[in-house]
Length: 283
Image (cartoon, rainbow, N blue to C red; front, side, top):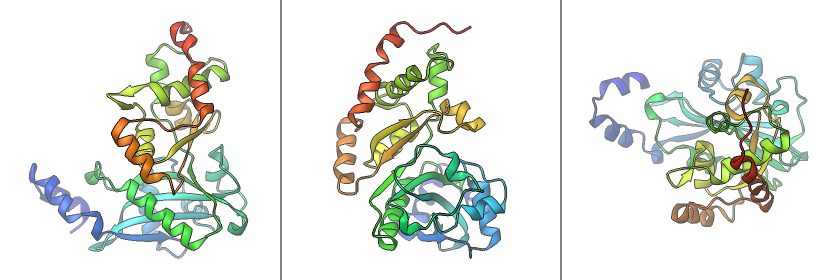
């Protein structure tokens, strides 16, 4: 029986409880996807990619070259049905733009010259399992694997979208035609101070901060794809995973919802105050 058939065969409200037992994370298989992976499985990953769409197998295979990594969870009963996967770029330093990472024509770099693992996409392939907390566990397993495989790596970071930023700008009567330094300040304010209940309004921020990461840097004009402009006003954000801080940061976030960020981001957020009290008119 296929995974969609499993979802359909279990009626609510018993469905969630049954799925949680069946797909308990302790039974899942962690697997590296590489250039030897069967085409059928690669096509499933292409269909499931939710952050940076993959046009064809050529693009998919570029994301599996020597300076890229892809890891996924599978259920042992359905070994060709990925549940969730993440993509990683090996870089020199923390990347500030996404286009060079996803460009299928980009030059393949020797991984031995790289010092940073950049997580640039995480996608849930099974709609029926949305809401199950596999993402943080997958990232942790991937970091363990990367450390084992490449002990010379010094940093683990993300280059993440800010999917609610453009909508917040519009709802707040802010103009995306503001000066770049004004947008930078507004983005910092959005990530640090705009809340959904007591947590950050941005879903990606909630995920990484809850997993123990630290907000490191904002990157304007970083994702100029149509989706990047529409959702994030072209911005991306780097979250840094310091392995010796993760447990402490995650516990602090659970207790107080504190957003751990470098001082520069807090300084930028302070610059947004006059913009918020005197929002620019939108034509």
